[in-house]
Image (cartoon, rainbow, N blue to C red):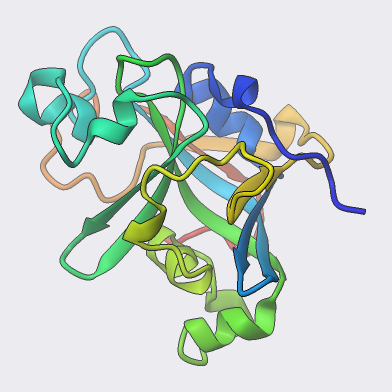
Length: 206
């Protein structure tokens, strides 16, 4: 018997709170009837402040108003926001907070637990440790692409969702600056909105 799916109320909270509590939860992707799943070991929160988050698409672009690319971030919580970056990678985010404001959590790394052989195929033969230890890697391993942008993560008949697991103790969680922000100015460059499980070997490399 699988664990209970997370409901929309879990996601309809500030991004930082959701980002920390997502650690240890299971992300599940259904592909051709087969479960590909991993335990979330690293996340990042975006746009969770009164001031514009200049590291976030929703605040940086169009003065905090939706654009065709970012519109999903301004919608209801519990929806997937999937975007393309560097001309080659998909990134999987979960919309959080309240409608009308950009608020989301990037899933940065997973510990693979189900469908590992198929993940290896999707990742072109990469080793177990290299399957999902980064946001672009996990998207490729779980076959996450533009088709899932806007997907409802809380519907019982969906193809991607999250499952509850045992809670992670606060002392097991580390925090630090978000990764790959380029020329983002301070304080957003160094603000500690990245969360990960201490000593987990599947956390991405900064």
